Amino acid sequence: MSSVKEILTRRPVSATIRLTVPAGAARPAPPVGPALGQYRLNLMAFCKDFNARTQKYKPDTPMAVTITAYKDNTFEFTVKSPSVTWYLKKAAGIELGSGRPGHVVASSVTLKHIYEIAKVKQSDPYCQYMSLESICKSIIGTANTMGIKVVKELD
Amino acid sequence: MRGTHFFKHLSCISSWRISSQPRRLIHGIVPSPLSQRRLSSVFRNFSTPSSLPTTHLLTSPYFSVRISCPKDSADMLSEALLCFGASSTSMDEQGSDEGNDKICIDSIFSDRQDVDVCISHAADSIGLKELPSYEVRVGEQYDWIKKTQESFCPVEVTEGLWIVPEWRTPPDAHATNIILNPGFAFGTGEHPTTKLCLLLLHGLIKGGEHFLDYGTGSGILAIAALKFGAASSVGIDIDPQAITAATQNATLNNISPNKMQLTLVPPDGRTHEVVEGQRSNSMGVTTESESFDVVIANILLNPLLDLADDIVSHAKPGAVVAVSGIISEQVPYVMEQYSPLLESMSVTEIDDWACVSGTKRRGLTVN
Image (cartoon, rainbow over all chains, first blue to last red):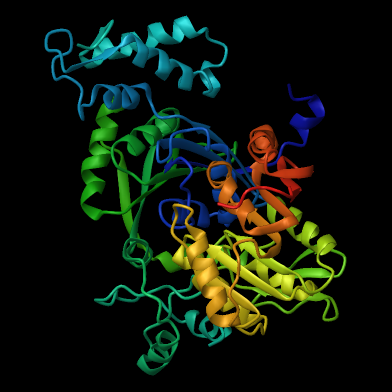
């Protein structure tokens, strides 16, 4: 919780930058370079920080990063794991969801896949206070909207 | 060729054409095509083959698009743009006294064809009634490269030890000054992990040691060891750009090649064949595998865990091995992996970063 003093002395923000970077593979080249370089942010510090913090994800998973750049050229960033739809597509082995969800089934995933995805999502900032069960339910809901069937076991 | 010359000429560049062959970037600055003679003399120095994909990314222009859209849909539009193919989006903070309800999003694309399609898809997907107005500008890689270079300042790591960028004068001419031009390799001296390793080296090196910098980046640790009095430094890395940057930095600090060797190694950890082969060639002595008095690896958690055996195997029994590039919460994993190999382990920390060091256990079987 921020104290009143912290809020009063909060640094002025100069910009909010969003981009997608593969986990553990940030380099000062594009896309990181142009996006952060414009605001004179320390590219090396960001790359090292981002790579160290994304070590626990599978290498090259595309992570959504939101960077808040302050006027004094310092920055903070938060990292979100890929969207549930991305994970489901990977688990189901398909590129696109079904064209007619509810009517046409694109592919299927097992409950174990759902559980694994929920475990990864639990470390996301906005899911931390949700129980694993409710995260799973939400993922199953997303799977239904994509036309992906959830089965007990794959045969 | 010193990098300072390029700065004088770069100020008069407005645009340049990409040459047909991909060029290796020198010190992170793209040279001007103003003088062919100057260009060719520069490229003469670089015989290492360029890694094609990165060089292409760094020489091709990118497209910066400024989109004007209503304030309350700006966040959603940013996210949608990323989904549909933008490389990145950024929003400048508006002053609270600005009356209008429009905000500008700057988005970067690598391919001109994607821009119109992406923006219309993104606008549709969040339900905007009309296509937002936007303008496309071509940006040169040099723009942001130069800006980041400008942000390097001399750093005092500890009393009497400064890391100075190539284009600045050292604030204290009598201190130990390491001149650096990091290019695209890691290690400017500002990062807490670099500081932790430099402080450790400063305390360890008494004179005459053989040092191995595992994952050398810009070569900063290898150079520092020699400046502190080590007999020789070997720097290895899996990234060709790192080896290039480190070689240039060694020259900047007037270090002769027989004191410091820099070698590219394969990423799978088979470093021994390369390291030992090099040493026996130049030193004229056949070496056993355990030949270094100090080994430091400032990389990342996963390689540190996977390559623990390889890293420690280069050290003499009783020699100091230190690893960094880890955040404090990752220290337990490192301790667990390294405690069978090292004893008297200790951890130093700056901010949220840690460095774990210990001495190699005697009596370990050598693979």
